Amino acid sequence: MSAATGTRHPSTASRLGLPELRGHGRFVTGNLIDSVGNGMLLPLGLLYFTDVQGLPPAHVGIAMTVGQAIALPVTFLAGHLMDRLGPRPVVVAANVLSALGFTLFLFADRLWQVAAVHVLVQAGINMYFTAQRTLILHVTEPGQERAWFAFTGSLRNIGLAAGAAAAAGALTVFGKGALWWLIAVDAATYLLAALCFATLTTTPPEPDGTPPGTQATRTGHTRRYLLLVAVNLPHVLAQAALSVLVALYTTRALGLPASAASLLFVVNTVIVSGCSTVVTAHLAPKAPRRAVAAGYLVMAAGMGAFMLPAVPPLASTAWVALLAAITLFSMAEILLGPALSELSVTLTPEAAGGFTQGLYQFSWAIGMVAAPALFTLLLEAGPLLPWGAEAVACLIAMAAAPALKSATSVKSAKSAKSANRHRRRDPR
Image (cartoon, rainbow, N blue to C red):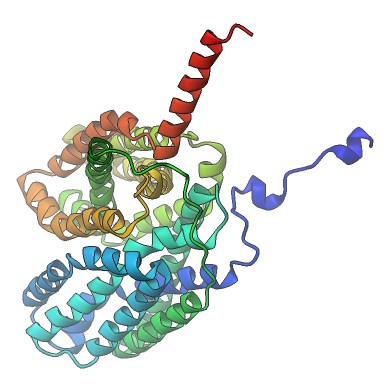
């Protein structure tokens, strides 16, 4: 065979860092539809209850927070159900629950009802993300975990942007009266996503053969997983800052128009959706703990860039600094998201199980609930404080990241150590 015919050129999908998509159409469609539903209504829930149902904004905000807080323990319930039934039924039930919650939006005109429907919607969201990472392991090929996490992250950003654009277009053409129809359509999209997930064929991954170990070993695994949960919190808060802090900071602290926050969100969406798979496949460190450390270093730099326009001598650099900041933020998000998700299901032998996934998702849920109060309080105390506090948290997480060796890495290291010891004993 000639060299010319023997050379295999990488496919376009491989160059783009895409996982093997053949046979996964319903899974991809379900993820995309779920994200479109989120994008359509997440920014508009408050507007619906204030402008259509005529409820006071401050009271609606409190009711929404109360409902989301009540739904926090659902992550552990979802984990328990996942251990009994597998991840697919939990993901299906999560989408049905979200559909029910958004349907009941149409009839909620009292504050206690607003809280109740947000319990349902947030419970669906918590259930979905508790089981979604393990579902990826059950429907895709082994060894492609991080590629799939990067790809589904891109899909999520594309879906959020498409949903937000559809909602904006409907509001522009039909006015705020379109909110009722947007909610009805949104509920239908969640049912369609549930149908896509319900028809999937799932295969649990083969166990790696690691014995259960002693009580001390299991305690060590638990401590390492708790460290992962703690390391994930600055990432959660950074994600919340994009939706909670940026708009207030740019308008109130920097005096920029309200459209500034929307522009930064668009830049973030374009970078993450367009670059996630390529960066994850070709530029990110292969060891997930190293990708996490690199991501937090870049994120800390992004937080520093956000601070610059609030320093009086640098106020004129606002737009340049903000665009640099959101670019660094987006690159950090690409490094952190897939690597942390990979660690969440591989860090310990039990990582993909229900309790650990519920614990990991709880860090997301509690961070999202706490972020609005935390960031607004810090911003009132000074425009530099929220960014500085987040930068410090990122640097602490970066220092802790090297301890996050996955179970497979630990097993490989022990095997290599044993092999080296054997070589020293056997001179052959």
